[in-house]
Length: 91
Image (cartoon, rainbow, N blue to C red; front, side, top):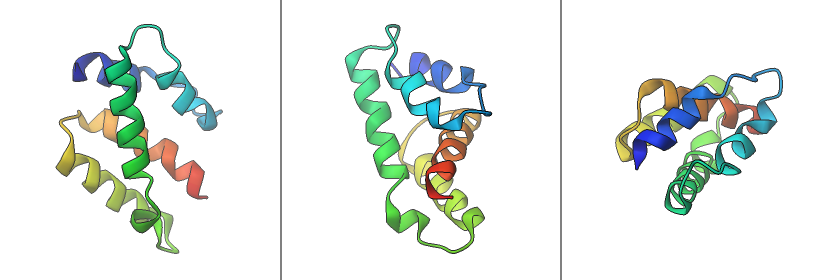
């Protein structure tokens, strides 16, 4: 299940419009409902205010990255894309 989700996350490349990342991954006909639900769970947990409470955005990125890494079996590139997209939510 993780492979399809991971591939979709990694395939996002429209960083000129980072706000489209979540929709790009979740509004997808290729992913199963379980995969979309898992992505939304990761997104919610990794975007928790407790991880992003720092005045330095870099610290929030590191905290979020570490959280995902510890709790989910995703490639570093997939984690990096999630964290990058989340960081725009916190700017």
